[in-house]
Length: 260
Image 1 (cartoon, one colour):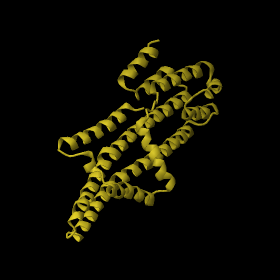
Image 2: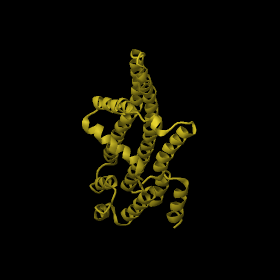
Image 3: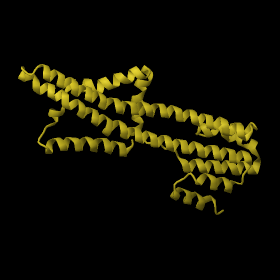
Image 4: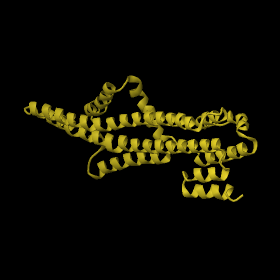
């Protein structure tokens, strides 16, 4: 569980509720079922018009990733590539074949298989970068979908506002309807703003950050695989790959392997 996301969600809800009470209101004042239908239901149905049913349903699984901790293990990947480079230097490239199947990272596994098969370095780079680009395109499509929803929600909030005002103006003689219609008119905008600014835009930001981290990891793996294919000294590989790490992690690995 990603504690940052959980604390942010719970803390944000708490702040909104506290603001309601400290301003003299109550939670019930801000609950309006017609506004839920208009803002949440309407904006989601608009997504269904733009995307497939499978994607629209799958979006909730993607949003759930905001609450899961992704362990990319960059330092462990560097260590593994360093060890494989040493093995290849001592025993030859073909010696890697016996350990490839034991690797957890499928991307690294496929790259090293190409190395063992004697594939040209340029072809290896192209194939691995194609896979990386395909991953980025998938992620970008999901991020665009969330971005679209974050724009649709306030739009439907404004539609609800207009709808509520129209209903109110048409029934001014019925004073009992003025309050409910005004509630729809105002609360739909409120819901749209919460969806866009409190939920969807921040979640999109977190998912974009995770995409950037995974992209950096795969770029590092590509450089490591090509370094092994070129027969680079393991120390050179270490210097190349630690440039992708945070300063503290870089220092730790340099101290561990770079001063042997």
